[in-house]
Image (cartoon, rainbow, N blue to C red; front, side, top):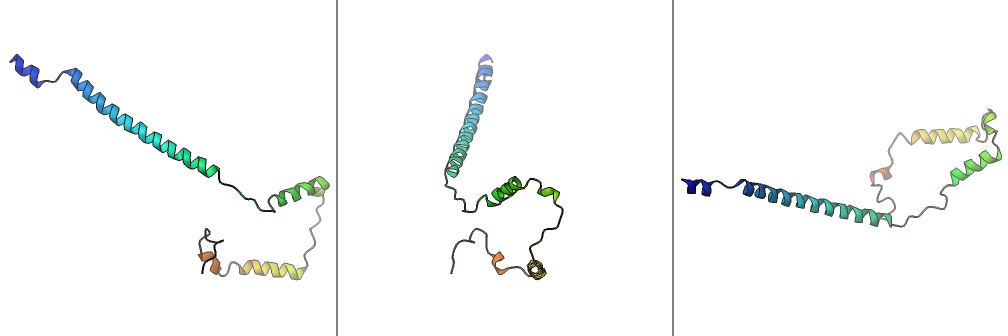
Amino acid sequence: MVGWKESSVTSSREVETQGTSHFSKENNMRHIALALLGAASLIVFAVSGCSPTTLGANTGTAYYLARDNQILNPEAEMNLDPVTGLDANAAAIAVDTYRKSFEKPDAEMGRSMVSAGVQTK
C-alpha cells in the first residue's frame, strides 16, 4: 500500500515546477511579443520622423503681416470706424458666389483628397 501512494501521487514540488514552467513560458512569450511590438513601433516612428517636409513660399505670411501691422499701429483697436475698400457691386458678387457654393456640390469633391494632386486619365 505504501508503494501505491508514492507512485500515484505526485509530490508538491513537481506540481510547483510544472506550474512555474508553464507560467514562465507564457510570460516569456508575452515579453517577446511586447518587445517586438515596441521595436516595430520605434522603427515606424523613426522612419516617419526622417521624412523631409516642404513648406510653401507663403508660409507664415499672415502671421508676419498681422504682427507687423500691430507693431506699426498698436492703437488700431481704438479706431471703431468701419473698414472700407470694397465697393457694393464687388461685395454683392462675393456674397452671391459664397451662397451659390452651398447650393450644388462640386464634382471635384467626389474624389479622394489623397489623389487631389495626382493627374489621372
